[in-house]
Image (cartoon, each protein chain N blue to C red):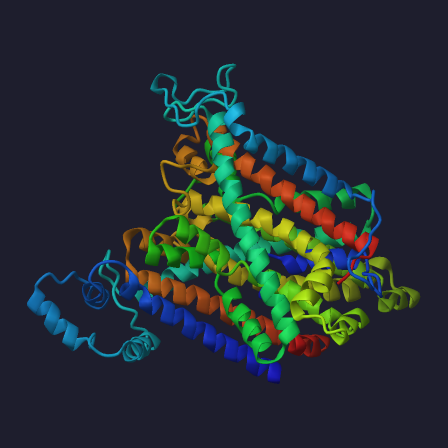
Length: 306
Length: 314
């Protein structure tokens, strides 16, 4: 893993590695079998929190006390009350309803781009490791270059070229986002390349695709899952940042980031208006970060592969 | 050696890619490309078709794209990045001013993070497995999930609106540095603490620590002579990585606090469609970031030879 990893994944890896030295042999057969029932507290807390948030957002249309876009100019900038649990915004819209509605967008964008990044990165990483040679070199140099571009700068550049919109948002979050997955998957695949069960599969005439699906993927899954969860938090924060800057979701839609920026002028009058959407992003990011941490700890504890 | 050469090849390629991409901005955006490009070079919007045709020839916009790129790159390398659309002044001096602002808040924030993180990490490592360790580790893990655009309003609310001790935004005097730096410092501080902790844990288990203790050095002496020095290196590497990242990653904080840094400049340039400023900003930020990381990587292999072989393979 290069030092270029801006978002501190080195930190995460170093930490877990130092605390629980990886088992010397690792699992010898795919799919890895591990002990059940050893959920670290952070994994438990993180996944429960995430489950609650996801459930609330899924049920938003039924849970929302008001339609999220319904304005009531007579009740602008009201604090908490029985009618409006989290108050109303500058147009008299119910903040709780808007939070539930906006979160769907934030979470959807973050998860869709994350899945694209994870799948692309993993496949490219496996292919590079299996094929080796020129393809491998090429892939590695491309990731080197992409890692040099800060995500925000890429986003600004894309807005300058394409203007704001869904495509810009999608590209901004995926162009560089697949590279960490690629490096991780490639590392796992390289480690397994000389192992008996891979060589046996090759000798039996299994196709490369079969080896990837049957042997590489199950072995790479635990580290990839943990990494995906940690990236999720980062994606959520970036989606919010882009919307906050007006480069992400465009009106009339809104998400947590755009709610936050709309509320900023009223910070001194009604702090809750700013604090609520920010807290929502924080809690969502926290839930997946904790989950990722827990997954890493569990992997280290049960002596997972890679 | 091969590794160093490869790193520099990546550096040059990255700069070429970045410059070519920003060079293309006026060609691919909507509207008459010639008029936009000429605006980027001349500074004013040319309305008259005859003048437009003459300038088009004069600036060589009829030449092949690659040729145009090379001449643009040539003048950019000589420091001529064109003139800003919005204020008509040259891009380079504006860019340098903004970069120095961003660099200063980034360095200050990271130093602050380092100052808190190294002792905190060492404390966790020494008290490993205790409630204190668990609490600090837990809190720093949670801090990682705090978005800057949430922390910033909270700090403004407390320090500017409630206590009234610090300005909520703007760029006057050292007091206006405090809130942006605090906001920027939180996340790196969390990562630094975790890395400082894990490297210190590793160091504490190393044989040379036992040996030093065996020679009769006190725990404090051992820590000062052997522990800190060896555990700080990974943190310093991370410091450089974060510095490179913050140059382009402090956009949100600069926008919130009205800091005249390069992130805000690029953001404003994108909003105003100020192509030369966008071009200059992107190239400068990407270039500086890749230069910093390249030098860190190379320096790291010089200091720590074990990294060399593994890196060539990686």
